[in-house]
Length: 261
Ligand code: ADP
Image (cartoon, rainbow, N blue to C red; front, side):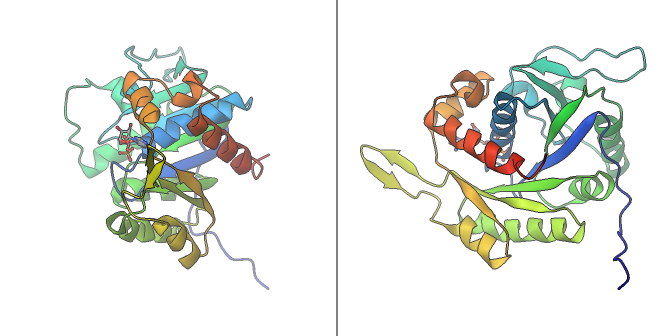
C-alpha cells in the first residue's frame, strides 16, 4: 500500500527536542497558568525546558513569571531567552512595550511568529512548551501548519460555552496532523468547608474527549494558591512542589513525558 503523503512541510524549533503546544479554544480558561506550571513540573523531573509564549495578541509570560528585563541579542543576532525558575523563557511581551496594545495585521503576526520560532537561541532543550494563542484563527493555523509540533494538550473549563470551541480546536489539530496528547479539565470544581461545587459544570471535558476518541488527562480544581502564585509571578509548582495542585502537575508531567523519550 502507498504511504500517506504528509500535507505540510513543518520545521522543528532549533535547539529543542520536543515541542508541546498548550492550547485552548477560548481565552481565560487557564491555558497560560497550565503552561507555566506544567513546564515547571517537567523541569523538576530533571528535563531541560523552555517556554514560548506564542500569544502575540495578549502575551502574559512576563507577568506570570515576574520577568521585567529585556532579552539580550547574541553575537549571532539571535535573541537570548531569559532564564527564570530554571526555565528558558521567550515572549513577544519581552520585546515590545508592555503597555502598548498588540494590534497586529496578518503579515505582522506571521513575522512575529517567525521571530519567536526561528530567532531565539534555545539552549539544548528536551521540551519547549508553547503557550498558543486562544482560538482557531490565522495565528494558530500559521503555527500549526509551519512548526513541527510533537503533541498538543487542550485546556478547557467544563462549561458548555467553552466545550463548543474545544471541538473546533480538536478538528484544527486533526486537520493539521498534530497529535493531540489529551484534554485537561481546568477549574473542574471548587471545594470549601467540606463541600465540593461544580461551578462550571461537571465532566464536560471528559465527555468531549470520549466523543472525539481523545485521551482525557485529568482535572485541575479551582485553587486560590494557584491563582495567587500566578499573580505573584511564580509557578506554584516552583514555589511549593508539595502542594496538592503541584502534585497534580507533577503526575501529569510524568504521565505525558513517558511518550517522549
Ligand atoms: P488563559 O491563558 O486561558 O487566558 P490564564 O492562565 O491567564 O488563562 O488564567 C486566567 C485566570 O484564571 C488567571 O487569573 C489565573 O490565575 C486563574 N486560574 C487559572 N486556572 C486556575 C485554577 N485552576 N484555579 C484558580 N485560578 C485559576
